[in-house]
Length: 246
Image (cartoon, rainbow, N blue to C red; front, side, top):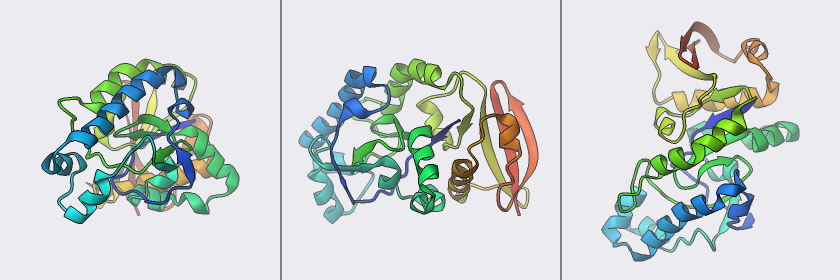
């Protein structure tokens, strides 16, 4: 099984690993491609005006801008991606409280779609960075670049896997599986949940790490906490599971 997961805008400033090592990332044969995108980001930071940086980072705070101006993603210390991101989904996933075997499962089977680094494994060490979702660097769209350059490798990598897509819709711009995959939709009082969907994606990811289903039968046998299956819909190669929050 492989879990596709979104990054988060919120990130921890803690760093316990050495500087960036792109050769350790998923798809090492594409190191030059990933290097091209990350160098474009760093070069822009080095030369951009304050207003351009505020737009890139999606911030207005001058004090925070000063901190971010000093970012050097190639020299700064790094942190495991699943610990670097600390938004709502990661809070409810609560990776540090899982058993070691469950953490190792996520390390090797969760693919996070970073706005800057593209598809990376949860165990991949990345530096602190800011890149507003969908923001471009001199008309360079990171999501379009990664979709074009990495989709073939992702298709090959996921070919024989049970694929669970827990990403926000935006990250379909980075990659859409070409094989059968599963998504989750959440309802409360029969209305689609938006903000709290992040929390429930995190909860689902946690349960998947605990049960580690290998096929559809095992997936459907999981009784997710406070969730009741309401509808199963197939749209081409996507199987959408709709749950009512109890």
